[in-house]
Image (cartoon, rainbow, N blue to C red; front, side, top):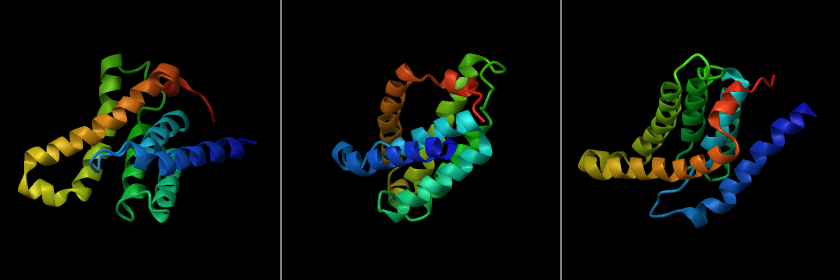
Length: 163
């Protein structure tokens, strides 16, 4: 039963990413629902399960063509899960604004890595356009992230003691 609870949600998130990302794409900028799921998973279950989940779902997305460059998804999602694992259970120990700045920074770093690999020629030619692509992809996903915040806040996920 525990395995079903850990297999069905990532498959549902993957299907949402696979089916909806083309409809929500605006000028090569698309939201990344998988990074939101990996973030919450790593925040609730810790670093090691988060890395495994991030690598697995990233590999699945790259194998099915959802990812833009093969291997980039597992790499960036694993790094995001690793960094997010540090925040597991730390909401009470850190100041709230520091905690929230950390997780926003982790998601921003994820999108910086993705944008750097996808648009590195743009970065060489025009820093402003590269920065706009990074900011827009980060902001587009953060809109969906903040919508999820209304239903399941990050501070509640950090306190989750599911093992």
